[in-house]
Length: 114
Length: 114
Image 1 (cartoon, rainbow over the protein chains, first blue to last red):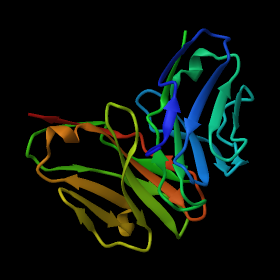
Image 2 (cartoon, each protein chain N blue to C red):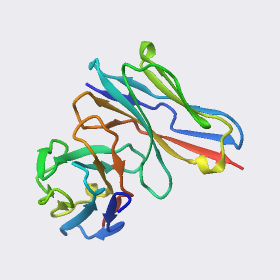
Image 3 (cartoon, helix red, strand yellow):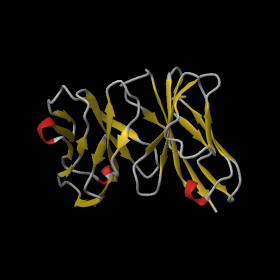
């Protein structure tokens, strides 16, 4: 596609429910990032993939968060046993290279945990 | 540690006014990149500019201009003759050389009134 695509755009989950957020990066982009954006804040780094390798997951807030990119293209961010503090917009971005290039962001998935 | 500060939380201007959005950054890296992104209500982050730390030349792109001053660790963004379509949240971000993480500021919400 022309840009980074994320689905669903909106997700409401009951506390304790598992959710899966999908990201389709720009075709051919090597790097893929996940960011979390709380209301009124700037995005915060969660994790980074170079092709299928997850090189950095230092920003994942807890072991309830898990991300994968098994074939080096589509990525899924999974949150287990969701809690209210997980409510945020989850942004995916991709970049053609593996360092120093600008990242292209998707529209995000707004997760609300009730 | 790296940090980006956008002290202006919200700015309101009347259409056709000029407006400057401030960005101050902290880093110990000698090589780094600075970015500005626009986040309209639709949610995606739209790339505006990338500037590396060795290039202090100011840049102009249409109604947009950027002033990079290493001496004051600032990378300010000016919109000339603002338009209603410029209304959005603007984020300044920093990335160290050879790294992929973006450190974002908290954003400045710009409202351009007709």
